Length: 308
Image (cartoon, rainbow, N blue to C red):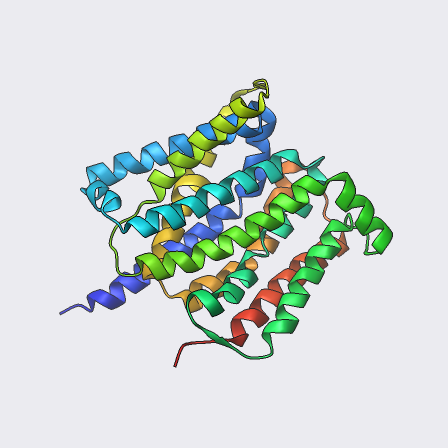
């Protein structure tokens, strides 16, 4: 008889790797959508559309009932964290002062792999070696280099950039923290569930973005062209729907020892794709930032031990 458990692990792991690929396009696509439709409106449409398509797929495959039947704690905790992450991430990318700052925000956001390992200590009751400390310090050093504007690090440059674009940087850092928490609570609260509730949470995120614009009184800022519409649809399908859905499954069914380490390449891949799509030439210092964030995450992973 086939090893069903092994097959489920392989499928979950494969979907996790695809999620990493899709998410590598997320920063550039989010910025393009924000420039065409406004930060809140554009991504609200993308999230709602992605969530709607996901719910249609769940209904067609008979899994929509399972999504609603997942543990209530999972919906409140993981759903709430996904909404909070989406709000922080979307506004960080949209509020970045220029395309160079978008690259900086992207690198800050990708502190989440290392933070995922750090938060696994209290949430999943993992143990760690002292290697965790230099791993975290190295990752945050890389983030500090990126905030330096891509021209080298100095406290003066660091302070200037942090003040001039403080909200976007802080939101990106908050997004990294929230997604690290989400990944761990996803594993803890829904590890034995067959449901996939990411489409429901995406629709909630889209609604919250619409409400955010209404509450803040921001006027609509739509300047779409054919390329903008294409980017909006692609964003809804790939980084929004399939990225979140595949990662949700991978965190519960995949091999985390393969999926999470593979995510360490995301800062470099995302920076490359973002630079190409937005027409920005990353400096050597910015590439060094990506490498430090990735290596720091790898050290964090090596420091984590499974529970006895």
